[in-house]
Every structure is written in structure tokens, then in C-alpha cells.
Length: 224
Image (tube, rainbow, N blue to C red; front, top):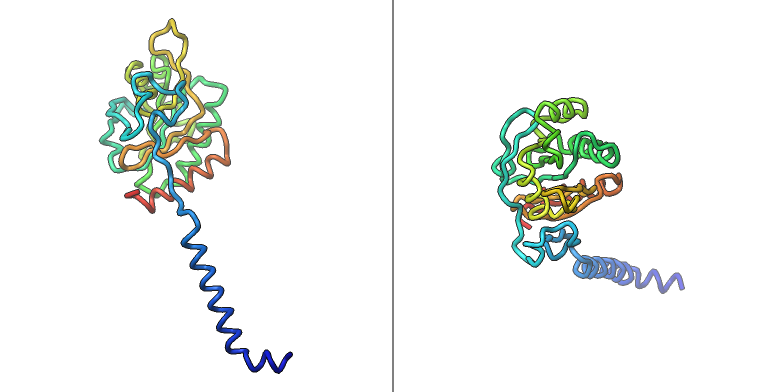
């Protein structure tokens, strides 16, 4: 037996190497390539979407906006042009899910602090109480980096419209109160083309890890 193996060792070695290469090639061809979905209103829970856009199945993008941040500066879509960013909705006096969301948003800030391509955007759902000074105090307390993360306030109707028509992430509040909003734990990932690429539980550490991985993937695959 040993004599036979010695006699054909070159053939056997070549066959093994060929088999490994062939299996590797087949694996690379057959395994699904990583990608991220592009979300449209029809793909999302109707409770989070304004009825006027629920039927849209393609070409959905984030609409234009204009709000005021924690420094009293006007922030528009131009400030996020060509950027990958994460958006959420909160209010400063929220004692339930907001502290976890803010803490996890701070983790994102740390993860991408030196990456100018990635920004963060938090909208208050109670602009009547979350004024610029209130947002500034909150930002200082929570360690917000002004160059990376904007906390914005503005006209409640505009915030409501953007939340439900663009980000597809906020529930209706009391029917008797016009433009009342109930924010969710959703962190919304937006790509450089203003398309929604993912929703993540902003209170869940594992979801934040997944979000960081997806942001890194988008950074490396900007045109996809």
C-alpha cells in the first residue's frame, strides 16, 4: 500500500490541490453575495407610513427638509448630501426607550467619529417643548459631537410629514390631536442616494452591531 502511495504521490497531491481549488471556486460562485435591501413604503408596516404613500413600490427617497439643530443652525438635506446617515425620532423628556436609543446612537458616533462620510440625525417629536436651548443642554449631557450628530427641532407638521412619508418610522398619536406622533425604537439607515436601506431596533445592542456592519458595507459599496 505504501509503495502504491509513493508511486502515485504526485498524482494524488495534484488531485487533492485541484479538488480544493475547484470546491473553493464553486463555493464562491454559488454563495449569495452580501447586499442590503432598498425599502419602499409597500415594504413597511402600514402603521408607520402615511396613507398617501403606502402604495409606492419603487423609487422612494427621503424628501427635502429644513430644521434647526442644537446650535441654532438651520439643517437641510444639503448638509447630508452624499452622506450615509442614521436617523431616529425621540424627545428629551422621554424616560422609556429614549435613554437606550441615545446611548446607542452615541455608540454609532464613536464608531464613525473619524469617518466624515457617516452622519447622525435625531428629530424631536415634541418640538413645542424641545426648543434649541433644551436640545443644546441635552446634547451636552449626552456627549453629542456637533460635527457628527444633529438634534433637530422645527415645525411639528413638517417633522410629522417627514417621519411618516420619508423615513416610514413613526406611528400616529391621538387621532383628535393633529400631527400627533408616537416615535418608535427604529434607527433608519439612509444611503448616499437618499434611499432607506435598513431599520434597526435602537434599544438593542446586537442590532447596533448589525447596523455598524451595514454602514461599513455601504461605505465600501457606495454605488450599490
